[in-house]
Image (cartoon, rainbow, N blue to C red):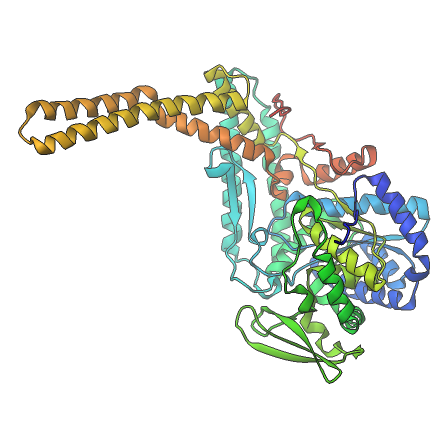
Amino acid sequence: MVEAHAVVHNSLGELVRACVSFREQNKDQLNLEVTRERRAGLAGFARLFHDECGTLTPLVQERIEELKDGNCVVLMTAHQPNFFAYSGVFRKATLNFVLAKGLESVLKVPVVSFFGVADQDFTDDRWVRSCELPAVQRSGGILPIEMKLPEKLMLNQVGKPSRDHLLKWKGEIEEWLVQAVRSIERLCRELGLEAARSASFVELHENLASFWRIVEDCWERAKRYSDFNGFLMSKIVNDVWGYDTVFARFSECQQAFVGEFEFLLSHFRDYSRLLKEAMEIPHYEDKGSGVSDQEPFLAPFWYHCRCGSKAKLFVERRDGFLFGKGNCVRCQEHYELNFGRENDPDVGDLASQVSARAVPMGLVFFNGLRPCCYVGGAGGVAYLMEAEHVAKGLGIPFPPVAVWRPRDRYLGVGQAEAALELKRICKELGAQDLSTAKDLLESRISGIRGRLDELDVLRSKVVERLREHPNDGKLRQEVESVSVRRTEVMKSSSLSVMCRELKILENVSRVLDLVPSVIDYAVNVGLKDTSIQWVRYLNENGDFCSDVKLESTLDLDVDLEGM
């Protein structure tokens, strides 16, 4: 059994020390000429992205020049261009930004934060086509905002949303905000609580309007769906927050790393063996391997099909040459590609038509770019553990890895409405907390349904006897009597009301545990203030696992602690 590797660092101080140590241990490899070439190649693609996005700020321009020069420390993160992405996507940029400033003060050299936009990923993922806002009155406690996308296409092959889509989403969000504010005002009256100042409600709407101007600008600039979402990420990070983060599209910048793809192919026997071993690693939280059983037999990259989808290629050896064979996952077109000699492959002609698979993504960038840190996501830890094992076997420096995915605790309109609904129901039931209130309602509902079931059974028996004696007037009266008693139980018990209250209680937990879209932060905390408070938390606390308490716009005296 292969031992698991401790790849994830859990605090800022620990991570800074790990990055400094990694740089010192690998300093001879961090200044290789080939590494400088890769960084210069990435710089060109980054400039293209920021030119098109309109975020080539002086700070970004400076970082691109430092990346082009190559004499810098590089930090890396990456993510799909999610639809109105949730906080974890933006949190990666904040951690990289704070880490870069800390390392610059220690190392006295420029530190460039690179954010790879995985725009060549498939449209099938849930979060590239939908986002969520807290809404305790709605089914499941969630308001979904959605975009219908064709399946099994690359994100960069889909056109940008229509103007009608934009108007529809804006209308849904505005309605959500208006309804939540009205509900909060009503609940405060019912509970005898002091309502929030009307000025804070006005500020919520101003926050939304400010955010939507950014959305409109991204829409105007974008030609593709992936850019609409990727541009929004960069606009927030570079313009609103003022970070010097350097963005680039994976679909473009991976062309700068052809040599690293060829390296993996030239060591394919070892790569395949190491990947098989890695899949046996005891994984983070026992989630199992991050890849399929086919992975060790596949080329380390997808091939882009002319239909806009991708083909996975199985590697074959014939007469000292390597070939990749496979079908497009969407149109099933068959491809057979010659990668050249087994010990000296050449995929330069394919550079614009390939993109790294999940585990090889880290291997390619870590080998070519030589970053001193990678900020990952909670869902990618299994991939990173496997990539680390393969990297060590192939002699690729594997940087320190961090995941910052806590819960943000703040009083937005959705959270406030949920908390007030909980307070109202607890007051009516005489319950102290959510768990007690749910138990009481479930018990009462169960008792009423039990009584209704008894009446249903009784009515069925009487009806059965009536079938045998259709002219028996007493039996007819008894059927009517049972039906009346059932109706009276339904009316007197308020069963439908209790069932609805129980649904609301179930939704309260969902609302308070939700990791919502950036829309929720923009409206309730404010985009700028979100960054300010995240940065302050990292500098003053630095624990990657603890909840983060944020101050919000809504000035309402409602305590979320213990809920």
